[in-house]
Length: 316
Image (cartoon, rainbow, N blue to C red):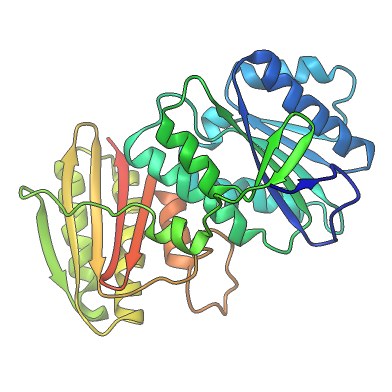
């Protein structure tokens, strides 16, 4: 590994995305508090997004040095990891043009599992693509005692830099977002009990919406949530019609307290930033997936040469 200086060794427009593994509260504070203070000392605004008492801990340890720091509860903003970049990180960076920003975050904590965890890994990796060339230093925290080994291994794969004490080192285990965001973990096929319909062409989008609305109503979703799900799935199905030659399939089923809809088609998504950043009105892609992240409670994507599978959750 190559040691890096904490300050002065970066160029304008460089992203520094670091992982810090901590074993107790003292190591947590020793990693976070100096990181924030060093940024404030050189005029870098800071965003601290941690769950529950962690926010209060950092605020207390910073003492009077909290001017220029924005505190957010990660337990709220990170429920749907797909929203963090477009709704939190991107607006924060855009609010400080011409200035380097610092971010402290902990999106993966003990207990996050399944598709929610999978979406967190994709989010962490997507940061490297979305903020490439941006003036930002981001420090991501990982509980080395409470998290399973797979989470710690994924943290290594999604962060180009590792922090140990005051040292920041290049990470030889880093895997680029083109692999981790879209091809990290395959999504399973719908269960045999799922309802499925095939669609082809924009003329069938009305039938897609009716299909989704019927199953959402059967799952006892309220009218507002039914409308949101119909819009999200319609946008994803429209992407099939716009970007592929073949038909698509939409499936719907209930898992415990979640209604799941899944879109399968023959398309391939190559850009890991799609659905993660705001798109202009003249953009030809990305807005449908961005809307799905905004309207649904969870979105997972897997894309390969065999096609694309997008799974969306609506909590009942």
